Image (tube, rainbow, N blue to C red):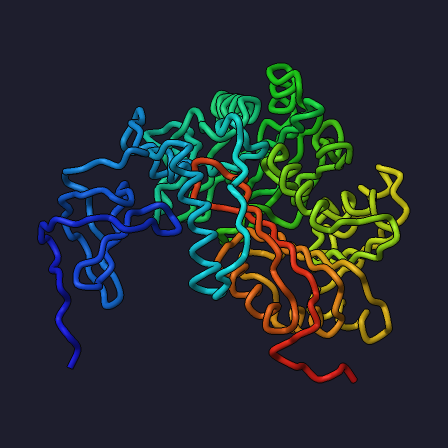
Length: 467
């Protein structure tokens, strides 16, 4: 028989918040039972109302604060931080950096069992606002008006938003201008429930170093009403626009982009720089949304790689070649692998764009391609991984341990899976020298980090030699 829960729905209780969840809610515990409360901060004492209970955790609503965190800041709207991506807007930037740095330290200890790793102070931004170079916002209708903004949490209700405080001003302006033009031209919004209507999303991308703007119109139908007028008005009202693209997504899906893309006006790509490396960015390209902090992150990865010009480097999960092309400036040879074929084509184009001839790229899963390279006798002195949030595939980690590159540089967007994978690599003979957290996404709960590992030849786990 299961033990009764220590709290009941609609009950009012006093709590002390101990931590934050991955989406920024305060965590309180009642007899070990976690209660997640939006807008609560660690160290605060509060009265909350229990609004939902489950076997593993409950949800509460903040009713009254008895003691406030020194990191709490007031925001213009108590609702604003719930959407628009600013989960931590109610925490001072100093507090956000403290929370993220502590998060990295805690998971390395708790999950990775890494007690003696040097974790440097997190690298934050001088100005943590208006940094995102890309927005893609859903479009809908309310009271007969065209609206565009963000979804409320855990719903598909669109909140009409005139400005996002984490988007670049040029991106905000582009979204609002295109929304206004579409409204004036009576282009009907897509209705998710009926799968009718036309306009699904508006996307804007901006090259911060080049001043080039791309606008992408995503529709359900191949026919775009008032197409010529729409293009004319965008050109007239957005002088920085260099590319206007139409993407068709006719499926019933939450995926934003469809398979058919065509250029309505201008170039297929815009350009931007990270450091001295130039990148061509198409409507479908993956490109870091905060190039300022991306350079900080990549500079640290390059420092950890310690290249002299004689090394062969493998870059797993290379994307459009962003890290690869940084490494190629200092390495003898770089081999990049990425599962998305279109990204590999972008990587090859970006290498050619920068006159870089010592980088080669292959399409496929890193956990398949790199073991194949290893069996063919292709090894590397340095191996760089930049995996998705789920971390590295186990087969790739095993191959790294078998290949024994002198250095591994692990770029992570999820501290928990970083800690898990570092533990596996340490048990396989590596030593984590140091970890550098980097705040790529201020006002959000996301934190990136880059780790430097060295081969020390004392594995605790022995894998069989490849056949």
